[in-house]
Image (cartoon, rainbow, N blue to C red):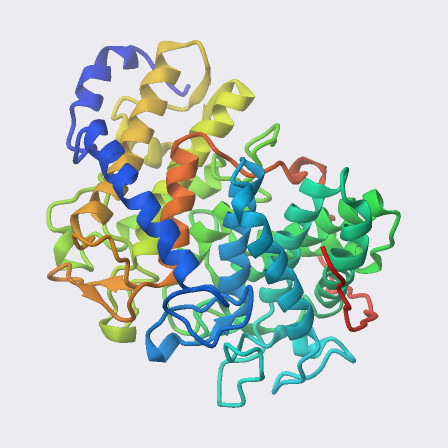
Amino acid sequence: MLRTLVGLSAVLPAVVASPYQLHKRADIDAFIEKENPIAREGILNNIGADGKLVPGAGPGIVVASPSKEYLYTWTRDAALTFLDLIHEFIDGDKELEPLIQQYITGQAKIQGVANPSGSLEDGAGLAEPKFNIDSTAFEGEWGRPQRDGPALRAQALIAYGNAILKEKKDKVEQNIWPIVANDLAYVGQYWNGVGFDLWEEVNATSVFTISVQHKALVEGAAFAKALGKECAGCAVAPQILCRLQEFWDGKQIISNQPSNGRGGLDLASILTSLNSFDSGAKTCGDETLQPCSARALANHKAVVDSFRETYGINGDRKAGQGAAVGRYKEDTYQGGNPWYLGTTAAAELLYDAPYQWDKQGTLEITDVSLAFFKDVAPDAAVGKFKKDSPEYKTITEAIKGYADGFIAVVQEYTPEDGGLNEQFGRDDGQPKSVEKLTWSFAAFRSAAARRAGHVPPAWGSDSSASVSECSGDTVPGEYAQPKPGDW
């Protein structure tokens, strides 16, 4: 018989005072208070047309970095950045609304730009990963297509559309729905095709891409219904969810199929859970890889632990302690270093999970997730624990402390001016690769927001259902050039 979690509350002082929290909570509070406005300015400086560091960028165009190598706009990076900005707008930052509207208008133009991936006529051009900052096509060699972009852009526009639907339904129908309709049609038609992963290296089927496509169609079906529109492609959401289950190998998530000779552990799987996070979820759904799910937590441990001996700067940071996190341990790009956004992502998942347990009123430890829990609470055992129990409080506080440990790592390797590059050195912690990466700034602010209890709107993960047998069913799409008017 499995033993219950007995007497764990007695070890609370040991957990709180343990090395899992590399810095006191007050230190983390102070760092976030200092870095958050720097990160906000860093994002805005990289968005045209008024971004101070990206002259020549069109209105609402997100430039990945002012560094020459990344002086382009990626559909994925732009969507993820604006998804965070739109969540901030929903939380009350109304100053961001004109910029959000510029982004939407700019994406309407980009959808119609013929490019090496194709054109809007059959939708294929929507999977073009990047464009010049004046919104013209990038004609050079690149890893294309990348099929996550349309789904992520749809998510961002749906979030804003839902936020203004009651007051400005006519603007949503005129300026937002035509763009979203194209992207949802693309997902419904092309989801079953291989493409390059979010790191632009592996031409395969990616867990991140499959997951964001599923979420976009679930949200898209509800959005279409609210507008009295049709979304034929949304009907394949259950098939995509079925495919998503194939990335779980029983112990961890294998991020790409095929894995291209790698072990399969990849930051992409943690980013998958962050995007899938449903603030209104009634259960810790393994199927959608919710942050509080056994699969997400077991995978978090596996991915983070894979870097503990990979990077010299992780030194004595043992299991259960915050550590520097990169993309995947076999990485050699720019020296294969930790990424700021990887380290904040590891923290963010651990802020999301307690939020979900608090909302649901129960925390469950299973055989799958037990090893994760034992890292932060050595007496942890399989069982269910209600929110008002001492065990629940001890475990959740330990996990929040563990999350703060990752923020402490970022703090240690952030330069005094607060600028966040793409990477920091695996052996010396010095900033590496391109400077002032927009995604690094956005990822920091997202983690800080979750720590503070600010979460994105619910998206209906509980309403999605898989099918008993997977198929590659697709739905032919219909596409038209969006023509947004004034706002």
